[in-house]
Image (spheres, rainbow, N blue to C red):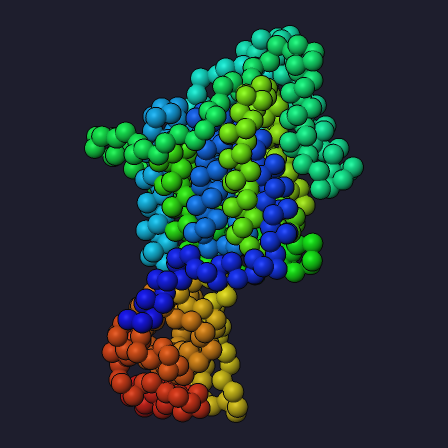
Length: 554
């Protein structure tokens, strides 16, 4: 009981979360200010791109960012709206309307809390690296394509495939007026890429948006703006709902919860290995608490009219590299954004939508790592297939489906490789040959004998011809499952039915209970046909051959 209470307490905030604050507060304060500045254009852009509006993106960054910082399982994770969530939300908004997003955020948040309380946080460790990178590549491509309509000032029907929507947007754009939006995008991209060369500490995205906004105003460009934003946070309220809405939203809520769990845990896992200006890594994280914290963050964001949130690896990396070492940094980031709402909302309203599109296009380009893609494609064939398949399905269909298919593909290809580790080989009888040895076959089973390899081994053993006794050496088997044991039953049954005596040698202790329960030993002609020594098994096989010869009339 005490252990259960201790485990439960590990999922809740504690004074020890801020034990290092007296030493790290300066770095945390600077990192929080830096991340807040970086997060502002991203929060606005993700809100607009998802279809719920810039206001929802900003509210989510503030509320979810604060709640996740306090309740999450990572000391340095920064949470808020992300590109991956935008990709999932855009078709949901098209199908169910903007009003469903807050309710979905609450539903997904509750699911994440349940997952965290159920101790399922470590499941992310079972997602293969090629699947994660394929998923990331697909997200980067989708984020880029989603910005094309904003960049060319074109409105396309919501809910379409992003590639089709991008092509349609270019075809129906109001040329030549669309050139103004493209010019803003190019300017933002140029400033974003050039500013770090001047000084890496400068907030490139914010400066790019500022330059684009001033330039568009000075030149009088005809481009769409963000528009009016709230000058305060909305009051929390339970999203309007009816029981008839829940079945239709259950699937999207599960997809959002799954994405939030995967992205947040992957981000926290990556963050735990990042090093800051002092060269030291940030240390471990609690995956179960991280799920609960992200669940509470999305739940709170939904109550304030926001959208689902996840851990954001880009902002988290900025936090760590700027000197953030405790939760205080992420808390300061949320407070900086809150200050923007109360003090600078009228100014933010003048930002061109094309400027936000430019920020996200650059972000998408940084998500796609050519170096990583080359490393995976040059590794093994099964990893390359899983990587490409996950990326293609992510862009073509759905993110959650992509992860599922990528996992299945990776699992099947891995099982195929494991199946090759299991084999059967016929061996010559050691020592001086005896008359009749040609009627004895010794087979050694190696490696893994499981459902992936069992069928092949069955065919090889059952195909033996011209022998009277078969000795199966099992001492080299490293793994045996129920399917493998059942295969031994079928081999023995098939050979014994042809009059061939089967002897088993070297059944390992860890396999003995299994072969008994499945019926391998019961299928032998005699219970004494089980041996620990190969010499004893060979001698017994020779005695069978001699008796068979003596019984045969001259």
